Length: 218
Image (spheres, rainbow, N blue to C red):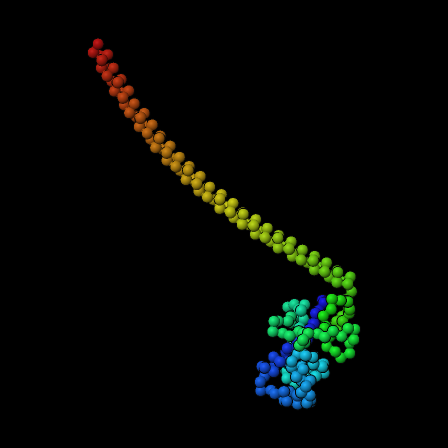
């Protein structure tokens, strides 16, 4: 990861404001110094604090070392946070142009150049192993997705089976009701037809008797 570290020139002034009970004299005495001129330049954000003084200051006053630094490329896992609008990441008046001279001048730490290197505090990992690990992770991810999709498919199939069963049950109930209705209608029709047949039979019997009486009189 390419970092973009900056010194927070404004932090010492913010810290002094947050601790009004601590005077310049008290802070300098704690650091074993009486150089007010240099202290004022640190306080005004003109120059950086020397590393040894900075470390001693943080140790004495319980200040996290990271408060004095910012990283423009910081992410959520970075121990040094990105600069905010209240931070001062350039010295008072900006960085001076010293050309190619280095020495003890305050130089601009920003650089577009990035050269990969091995950190001796971190184990060296073979890139081929990293590639295999990445492939393995991708394979595990794909396998997880397949299992998830398969599980979702089973859920959908089970849900569709239940829906189909409910529809079949509804149609079975409707079919029974329709059959019952037809049977009732047929029963009424049969009763009506039998009634008609009974009436006609009685009429035929009456006509037969009348015909017999007439024949006997002749």
